[in-house]
Length: 208
Image 1: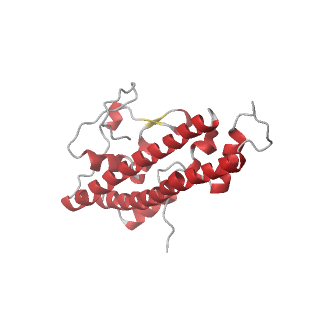
Image 2: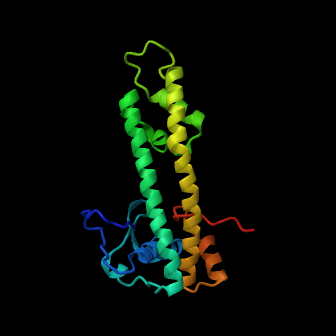
Image 3: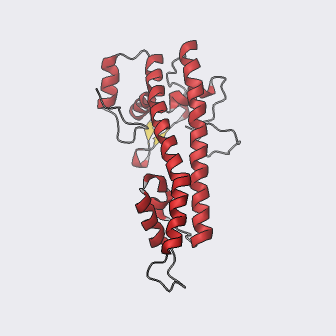
């Protein structure tokens, strides 16, 4: 589920909702509980992709938020949107730089998500992706290139990692608030996590 401020066009699988409580609803629709519910009620396509058919989506039970829950949810969702935009911009800037600086047109999956790599792993991936044509050295990156990639990692990957850690913490807070909105018991929450699918938006926090 996505919050759209750019007036995107959708295909026939898109459901567009215009509501006053959009940030709360965005949180609810992306929550582990609604994910769990959707996979048991909605029609599925290939690879377990959910098909939100209108007549089923209209019957999705929406827990109305209390003033307290809504006041907590909305600033967290707004912050998560900021984090997502900042991370996307960071990835985009580095991939554009790799393309112009090292002529890496096809970075591959690992390099596209360079913030999930260590500094040494990123240097290694960049080295391997630099085109061979015109290179006279066995090390196509070189010492100067290693320093540049290290600086890019420090400037972009580490902040992305920090924001991602913050986002994970905030997403668990939102999950707890949605569970509260639905008045789920501890037993029901435990069952939800025990029967959660591998692609659930977030994983259960370790029990203390």
